[in-house]
Amino acid sequence: MTIAEVSRQYGVSADTLRYYERIGLIPPVPRSKSGIRDYDRESCAWVELMKCMRAAGVQIEALIEYVALFQKGDATIAARKALLVEQREQLQARMAEMRSSLDRLNYKIEKYELLLVEKERQLFHDGTEAADD
Image (cartoon, rainbow, N blue to C red; front, side):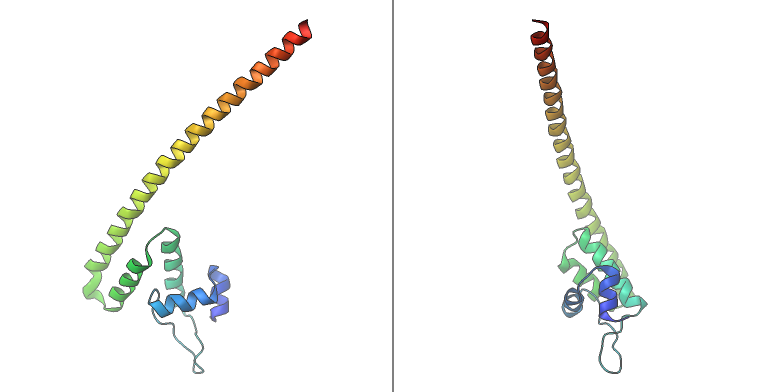
């Protein structure tokens, strides 16, 4: 696949794809005889993985380290797993923090909704009294 096709398929700009490759966030992409990037299935899998990890907030440095370890082969399996476990723990902590923030927002919104209902009752009640006069 061309860089334009990969860009469209994964919703990542061509500049971002080049940047990811340049900094080692994805392994070098195979090239055609004329030197044009020719994304194969493995390259696309790396793009998809990095897009997912970045969306989850995983730090670029950790992902670069993961790719570097992967390229060193099976001797780094334990190190790669440890890195992923650490990233999972960080993500779980962020998710718990976000859950707490969401709970707080929901509480505040509920308070405002109750306040509005009470205000509407007062307006309705006041309107009823005026109609009874």
